[in-house]
Image 1 (cartoon, protein in one colour):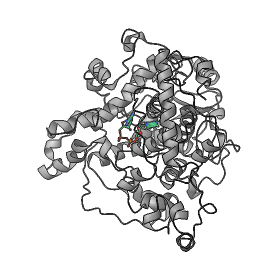
Image 2: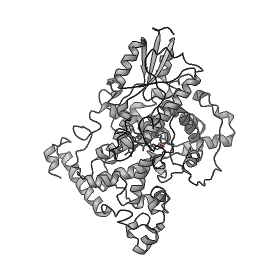
Image 3: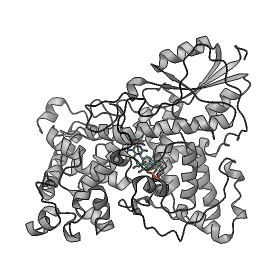
Length: 541
Ligand code: FAD
């Protein structure tokens, strides 16, 4: 292969073939294309001191999801006559060496707004000021131009891979090869498989409201008995490799079109059930968007197509389109706000004198607060790396302004490591929101760790699944097991204080104290117009 007219596509997050502008540009007018992913050993190295399996940066589930996505990308590239070249080392160094050795003339990669990749672009920053409310964001964004622009064309082949000389090329490593042991243990086995193929399947299933996305496969793996009603499921032959506008909904019968659209059209975020785990109430497309296995533009245009069929549908902020716009909202604010990910030196974050209580924090992190609803959600985070949005609300509120008064940055770090959809802008934005540090200020509205979950799941099935120690606790005590008489605890084989912890705080008094302290902090922020000094803040501790 002749050197000199080659290009290199550096895959970082956009781990897909469909609607991939960087790949499209890289493969145009080139004799050879090097599709590269660089494994940074620091990111992947097992950290056996961490509180749960994984590296210091990412939980095992997210590392597994990434490797699965790479295997799928490699397989999809091979179908187009190419392959993924996996390299190892410090990314900057490795890339520089390859560019030189392979005489690459064109380097392409997906632009990323995270600080790590950021090069400031003033145009998207509203004259230097990002919009700080969802409504002002919508006004500014209108119909986002990226969202309505045509998708990249589908392709049947890619330029051949160039000669890689003496550069050492690897296959996508397995977890074992990365140094992880016992990786198939059920305890840390997310049901969500990585990769573009799975992303497109999940998108199709979501659009057709198929029951139990991907769960049959997972249940096979976990030998868990599943009884589900499949009566409403409908399988549609929509070729997702074609451009969205070519998907011919008109060819479907009216009944099918109704089913396709109904779930999407009726989607209303606050109404979803956070305790639904066999069939989550939302799409679970977030990990695929995070790694770029799914194009957000493609997703958006699919939703718009559905809206063309069903005129009566929900709208932003609660609709599914609205959810994607939340994602863009947080990206926009995060991109244009210095120190977005911290309280100190932030112009948008309220200064609050959070407690430094490592014991309470560890109890929350490890799912042993004594509140089964909170602990079950944290166990789902550890085991699956994904929870419903409202479940995230509950645990974030509990840790911060609801009960424990611990700094949101500590909770953010735990989510950042363990979520498979962990996303810098969205995660920080939502922690700012939930802790009433920015965007949302009604600190008197607190999620009850007892009654909120009960509303959706009175029998506590979610708790019983994620906290099997409580599986025999009678329904009337499942949310407050410490109130069960000892005889009942004995019968349920779960003695509170021995087999399962007592509550670390009493919600009623703890939440009252939190509100009082938030009130004081807000008053101080008002007095000093947000510029509260360390000294003034300490006076509230
Ligand atoms: P759906 O409801 O099906 O929504 C579709 C897509 O819209 C999502 O995949 C996501 O990309 C986007 N979206 C939905 N809700 C939000 C939101 N509130 N803000 C921004 N985008 C949204 N989401 C992440 O992707 N990564 C994170 O690290 C993350 N951290 C969070 C931390 C906290 C404390 C909270 C309260 C929420 C966080 N979220 C995060 C937002 C939200 O909970 C998830 O995006 C959502 O639950 C993912 O599930 P889904 O794909 O089924 O969502």
